[in-house]
Image (cartoon, rainbow, N blue to C red):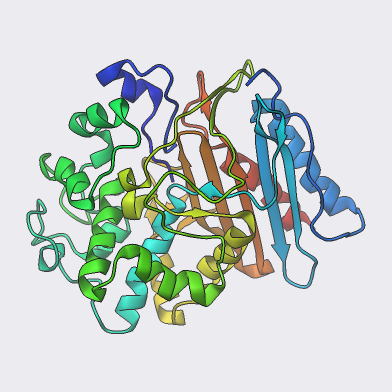
Length: 387
């Protein structure tokens, strides 16, 4: 996933040279290893492989800090913190840190939608105009089109009107209706179902549908139907940029020079159902398992969300994307990126294994579209699969 509001896009409208990708120190800020094992597990070749994978990312890309965790059925979980939460203060990264998880939020929002399908409160073939007025092609676009990024609706977060306000005030408070209005002013780029196009508008609309159907705020619905049943005590749908401490400082890092610049906090209301959730490494491991295995859904719906997957042509570097879930190799889950934070949580059903990664940096320089968390996930996944 990527909330792709990069510096180059922001710069078109306001010359915001200090803002990094939102879907997004001194050199070498991520090279220190300040982490500890959660459980006193004896070192072995696999754990050495995990550490080597992390150190390779630190060496190649210089992110200030990393949290990483691996859970494999029948084995003690492995979680570890590396580097710094704050470079200027030389604050070590803490395992219990709260991170904005950006577009991993989409996987929660769509799971909530599928739960409402499961309970018979709505259907995936329902047209969006049934719930939200004024959507271009609203009589044609169904809820599955939105969940699978096949609606053709423009991404509100890439529209000039939105960017002009966001650049001036990253803490500006938005309503979901205000966000989608930027999209509604643009003609859809294709008819629903014809193509794949990653758009944050899709899951903002689905969050609005959830509120309409349940009569609850999206925050309350998520808490009641997902956070509490899974015991995700460190996960929330906040309305403010201030999160429970410890929270790392977000950075934009030049992956060639290692120079990192701290980034502004952003209001989660600018992301809504597409990217507002905050969580911890421990909770992301639980969520990655539940998402990949479908523990909150009946088997038929979990199979459906994966079977609807199609090849990805833009956005995050998944191989395929289903209904609020992406595939990388044989792993299923979701990634997130934007303004100083990058996240990934993925599950491998055949090994009952989950990997979660959190990085307090987004890349600058020549590779702004790189997701460091995804790069690290793939290295950790290779260690798991080789075991």
